[in-house]
Length: 339
View 1 (cartoon, rainbow, N blue to C red):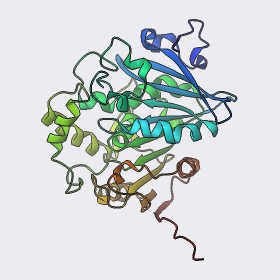
View 2: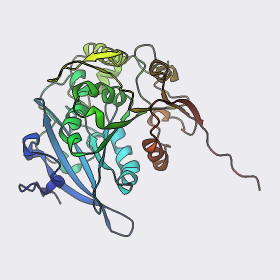
View 3: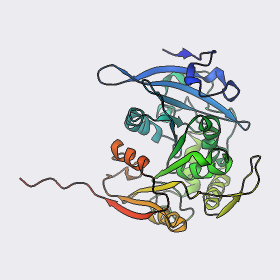
View 4: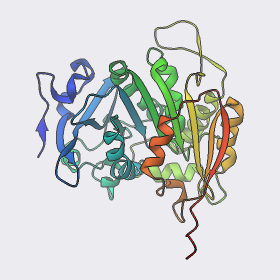
């Protein structure tokens, strides 16, 4: 059953000012429950507005405790990783006390084949609006701006913020830092899961030509010219490697693209069918700090999706905060014990 938004402000826990909500597409969803039927999370579908732009997604709040830490999830392209993240990882994150905002890409089509994998919310699919966020053609720059909307709307209400990005969602998460200068100081961790952070030349040989892949994404997202978006994606990634950037949002001075107080964790599945490990190695070397993990526990043919990543492992990565340290690690599947 869909619950209409509480006009009194109790809906979404009072975390968001009305000015930042499109209330026509904000509604409550059935609560998450544990195996014994107890409510463990309040769940809402929200449409956030900031800087003249909009993004939609699910907000999960622990049902029985206050939380001072926010996680913002940004999926890859076209966005089907959100289903895996919400079903496998969100319950553990909420049980640990995190509030989670799981974003969907603007322009995602709600009435196409397999749209449930990208929207992952039948109540939203039943709404008349046939694309998420905005009823227009969106660009790669629009998609890269999505985490910044959530950061600026939700970030001020929390003590700490952690970003998780999968595939293209990783550079989008990093790109958002420049658009949220008043919140950046609260970000403690950024976790890149199979992140497309290497730029041109770091796609695996088995990956289709990027421009062709953009054409495929057009069938799922109302996104514009494939070639223009391919070029924009490469530009967005390269901007991560700028040592200093101009802050464009009502502020003066410069800011490192990935400030030194943020713990950067890179997880790459060995044999990733989409990305070469050299892409994450490039960012790791550039920063000269962080944790670079070669994950050998993933399985074909979907190594890139990191579906074998355990919730308890992700929790440990989010809890680590040694931002100035530099380490490489390899995770291997345990060998069965000999009888």
